[in-house]
Length: 369
Picture 1 (spheres, one colour):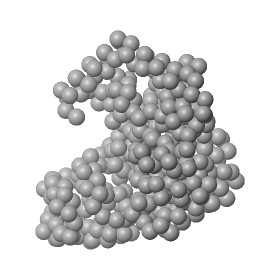
Picture 2 (spheres, one colour; picture 1 turned 45 degrees about the vertical axis):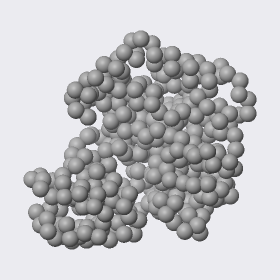
Picture 3 (cartoon, helix red, strand yellow; picture 1 turned 90 degrees about the vertical axis):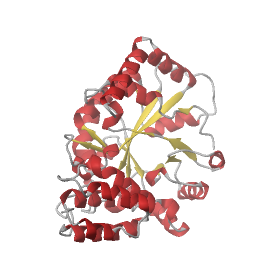
């Protein structure tokens, strides 16, 4: 966002606070029994060019996360996801008597920094949260494909444009377009630079094909494999058990982080059941909630999730036909650094207010299957 637009946005946010629009919105949400569910991924120490090889929309710094929690505690009643689901599922549609609207915090994937950085901040503020684990990555040195792709493009020699372009010649034009924008750069591209290319690849191909792309790009740009072999990006099971013992709720995000709508029915069923069984065995407790990777689902998958024993699923959005499935459907809003950055590039309450005003909200009684 350019400086002019940022300043306009900041002025608009200040008006929302000064005129009482934000406070009245909170009161209205509380009276109607409306709630929001926030989704985080990674919490890192500082904002730099690489963002530890993650997409900008997945990252929040520790300082910003701390300030977001202070703001959220002031304006919302933060509860565990299961408590929020129970409240929203009630058949009693009477107006709520809560002074503040409900809010639940969730984390997707199971990144190591959720334990090392986010967990101490959550404990400091005594704020509950739910973490959705991608079980095949927990306790391993495996990495997501987009982490590897960002590493290759930020460490590789992109000067041989002909050879690198040949690597993606079978991909759609949009993928070739965004790669072409990176090749003339005179310094290593940043996470911000690479992000449009990653998004284009994500939309264009399945994960197995993408793995081949990463291998070929690494070879073409002179990056030695294995990539990031000395890093452990994800939680250990001991971390998970410690957080669960401290009250952090654990849900499933599948096994492999593959988009389930792209899998055969039996493969998707395995992702739903195997991940749930492993988490329950590891933590000695029940797994009640599932978050679909990339928020992608359909009615058949939700019915599979219901058969697997989940009580709720989190999606990007729900279509009318999906409400008939015998499982509770949740919508969430992504949280990251940009959700609360003002015109000066630092934390801004006014920016966060505008972000949350646009967030999808759930309402009491709306989750009845």
